[in-house]
Image 1 (cartoon, rainbow, N blue to C red):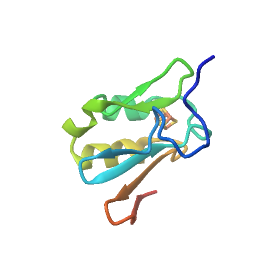
Image 2: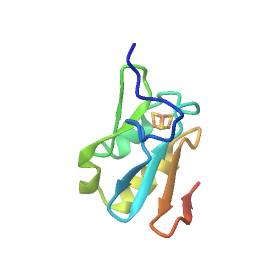
Image 3: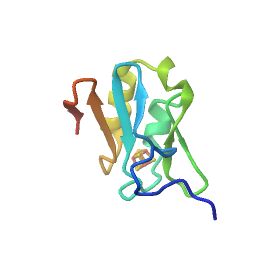
Image 4: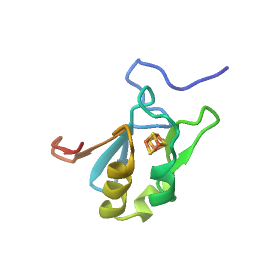
Length: 91
Ligand code: SF4
């Protein structure tokens, strides 16, 4: 299977992705496909065919509050958010 989830530092479908003034990444090793993030922020998150969350291009249409709420809803804290100064906002 052609998977883009490599460890070479290249950005894959689960990020890191710049969304307005934050950077969002899903730790695919932690993600259990619970889809809470998709329920809270459907413009930002979707599940791929491995049931791992990916970050959508429409993420810029969600507010930071919505994306933060989605991160907080994740049962395994797999969504990691940094601001543009590199400060970790969540978890
Ligand atoms: S809520 Fe967390 S575990 Fe569930 S799909 Fe989203 S990132 Fe994965």
